[in-house]
Image 1: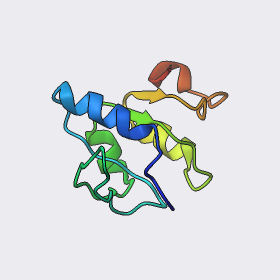
Image 2: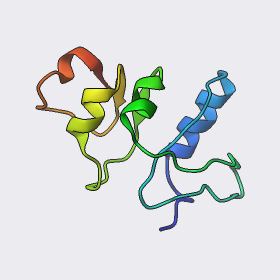
Image 3: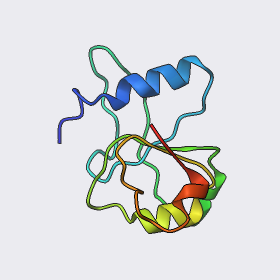
Length: 99
């Protein structure tokens, strides 16, 4: 897959400028390649209960069918959902912010 046109990179850039510690997961992009405009030098993290629980916030910027949204919801403390992927899941109203 070709990530170069992903709007997620602008989000990563803005978060990095604000001092956020960046991690990402993408089942189709195991390593972020250098690009003309962006260079993050990041590897995709596994989505484990421990990884999700250790994050201050999970930002969902793309909705892959490979994701188990219930699993993510069960283990994350705060989720910003830009894709409406958690809509309808019980408990989402306490952890999910729609963006």
